[in-house]
Structures are given as C-alpha cells and as structure tokens.
Length: 511
Image 1 (cartoon, one colour):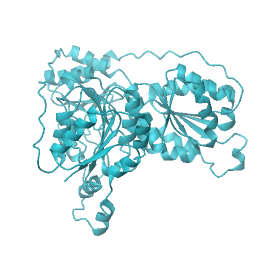
Image 2 (spheres, rainbow, N blue to C red):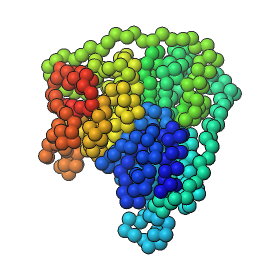
Image 3 (cartoon, rainbow, N blue to C red):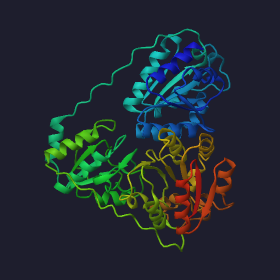
Image 4 (tube, helix red, strand yellow):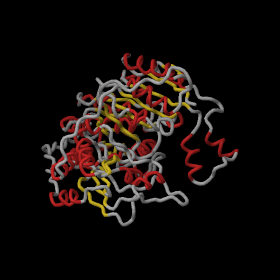
C-alpha cells in the first residue's frame, strides 16, 4: 500500500490536516496508510453527509482543504447534499472516493455505480486514477484545484491504493498570481451612487472588505449588501452592520427596484431561490448593467479597498459597542427573543453556523454590534448542514466556541454529528430551535398562493406526532443537553454552555 502512503504524505506536505471519513472495504488501504501521515487528523463520522458537511465547515474556517473518505457511489451519494452546499461556497475539499479494483469493475459487483456521474455536479475538479504512477500527480492537482475553485473529487480504485509501486511526489506548486483589473475597478467607481447595488459574496468576506463596502456606501449613497447566504463573513468593526439581501424574492426585488447598475464583489447575480407564481425570478431590473470586480475566490477585499480609495471614501468609525440587552425573563420564546438572547450572550470570537431558517430570522442583524465573530450560512440550500458545519469549524478552530443555530427538522438529517462532537470533545453549542414543524414549508406554501392548508399538507409539515425529544437523542450520542422554554432560561443555558468545555445541546421550545 505504498501508493496510498505516498498519497497521504503528499496531502500532509501540502497542508491537509484533517480527514473526515466513513470508509468501507475499498478504502481499507487508505485507512491503514493514515498512520504514515500523522499530521492528518482522522475524524470518524457516522454518516457521509456529516463527513462532507464537516469538511465544509473545516475548509471555510481553515482556508485549507480537508479530505473526505467516502465508500464508492452510494457513500458519495449519501454525502452529496452537503457537497452541494460546499460547491456553492467554493470550499476547499478533496474527496477521496473509493472504487472497485480496476480488474473487478467488469464483473459488475453489487456496489458498482457510475461514480463520476454522481460526483460531477458537485465537483470543481474530477478525475479517476487508473494506474499507481499517476496517483500523487493527480492528488496534487486535486489539492490545488480545491484551493483555487472548490470541492475536488479523486476516484481511487482499490488496487491503485494497495499497490506497492511508489509514485514520485511532484514538487510543490506555487499559486498563480491574481491581478486586479484596474480599468474595471475604475468603471465600477464611476458608477457608484444611489441607483447602484454593491453586492458582496465569495468564499470569505473579511472585516476589511465589509468596512470598505460600508465606507463606499456612506460616501456615495450606494446600496451595499451581502448576498443572502454568504459562505463566511467576519463581523468586526465598521462593516459589521452590513445587511444581507432578503431571502424572500418579493422583498429583495422591492429593495432593488430602482437599481440600474450592479457591482458584483465575489457574489453571483441576484436571483430568487425558487420560481413562484407571479413572483420575480431575477431580482434586479432587467436593464441593470452588471460589473464584476472580483470572482468568488478572488481578491475581494483588495478590489473594494481600491474602489474606496478611488471614491475617496474615508475611514469609517466602528459602530457604537453598546452590549445588546437580554430580553425580559418571562414569557415565551419567539424569533425576536431568540435573536436577543444570542446577541446578549455571544462570546468573543464565536463562530456561528446558521441553519435556523424561520426561527432564527432576526439573529444575523441582532448580532451586528456584539463581540467580533464569524458567521457561516446554508450556501446551497440543502438542509442538514448546520450540525456538521459546526463540527468541522470546531476542529479547524479548537480554541473558539462554535454555535450551531439549527432548525428542528433540519437537525434530523445529520443528527449523527453530535456523536462526532462528543468523540472529539469539540466546543460546540448546538441550539435546536424546536417549533415542532417544517415551518419554512408552511411559509413557502403560502408564498405559492395556497393560503388554506389541507389536512394532508398539515400532516406533511407537522413534527409533533410523535414529539421528538432532542435532549434524549443528544444524551444517547454522549452530548449533555437541556430544554428551555423562557428567554431567561435560554440565556442562562447559553452562558453555561460557553463556560463548559466540549459539546452541549440546548433544545429551545419555540412558540
């Protein structure tokens, strides 16, 4: 299995430090070879969707690729939803996907499938290794492609991995230089004004990038927004109060109704999440001119700083740092109280992984003036991301508290992440917002024009028959838990979780 050993040694040399795995028989030589690369931390996940989601959270926070180790086509298929989210975020991930031995594929064994066709829609780079001599060369290409563009998939037949042929490691590659288009930036600066949208997105929005956008907006009257579901936003200083483009297409199109120029700084052109009867699908006016100043993985901050300098947008002061107040102790917990509790207790340098859907509607805006933190969102819309994302983020940043804001229905897709958190002693506060329903679907039903829910529709959206006990589930996976039903109890539970090492789960009974 020297080929597998050389592969992992090269990955370690090139900065890979974690492997999120749910392996099978075809990957046993890769598992055995992990001992040859002690710098790579092996992390067992009980479901492939946890492995891929954790690799996403790790990559977003580390800025470096993690490995996933997946078993053939069915294992990859189990992980595709969160690979889709990672693909939309352009997260650096290298998926090592086991395949049957090259000479066994012709026998059409029971687990045979078209792995490449499954991987292609969620991969920025895709190859199958057919001979050991190509293994480390392709592995290096996969790592560099992941750094540049997002998830890479390397399909690895078992006999290639177990080969004792020793492929020669290639020399480390130097990343290509990125040059800004000065003429494009000057064009964008000339277009600034009240009828211009500056839309921010991309892999990572730094505090400096957000501050530059805020200065541009203050100086010129430009509408500066962050895309609806950003991969990662650093919230600190002058740019912390930038708002996101609304999720609801009717609200977003109203906000952009008078826009005639769109400047894209790492963001995609704004479109609706879904087509609905009578609702717009392209959110800006059709006549609006589009200027792209930076690609999603490009130099977004530098581009914005350059435009700010051209526009003579002076340095803006940070917003007042008054601590948000805790809500009144009594009463029920609703979306407003959830946001107030989070904002009043958020610890410095927290990482918030947000899949809160309807119950967490106000949390992002409420935390604008809290201690510096990072915010990660559901980039691709495939639910079941929050708990795995938090798991990977905690491995990337072990000294920071990670908070998973998780809708109750979404949590059940990848609840196995709790076991990995307990096994790895990760500092994650899992907040399960339990309203006993797929509430987002009720909202979408009404937006589709169906205002009276039928008995069948209510049955498909209801999660109370029987009620799900998330505290018992958490304890079964080894995670201490508690249930709260008032704002005061929620604040105290959050503060206890931040003060305790390891994972915790708080089940919030939402009204």
